Length: 279
Image (cartoon, rainbow, N blue to C red; front, side):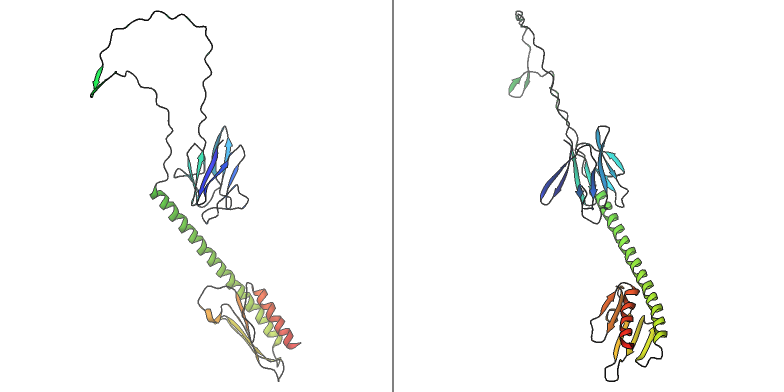
């Protein structure tokens, strides 16, 4: 039976193929799970049609290669090497040897008298005289195994995959930073409404919003015999300025710093503090 052979550090794993489709990808429910960054969730399938197996790439970024050549869909032959990301698979489907039918039984015949032929001269070959061979037996037909992908082509493939992965990661980081800046602008809009709400309250000593410094600072005192409380919202942590944005930071006197992913979460915590202050 045809099969796919996957070699790992723990040894060879064989997956038998039938007439059903074999799925390959990062998804845990795939028949062949390949967990690396260069493999898509649903990367390729091995199917069976018209009496032979084939492999089909599912329009992935890094593609599928058979014997070093990128393919979208290609028939598979015994010994083909499939490269998916960094994983090497081998398709095994050796031809079935056919046994010739037995010869029909015949009644024995009387052998004719032997004819003695004249002796033929032999051709000397070195120190011994060997009979001249007039024909050679047919050599068994051997299928040429496809060579592994050329190192240069494999290097180009991996370099392209790594660059594509880095570009995608960079784009994801830029999108995340843009989203956080939008969340911060929303937090500033919420804070401006809160400042109008508590304006004139003697317990709120200071309520400043700085778009230049990307922070919101509130100093409050609930009662004359209690200490002044410091509260700050900022787009990045004051001790980690200049690094990638991670969220909206909330710092309060006597409490651990907290980071919120959205403006709604951060301002909701700020509203609770103000409500407790002026209640």
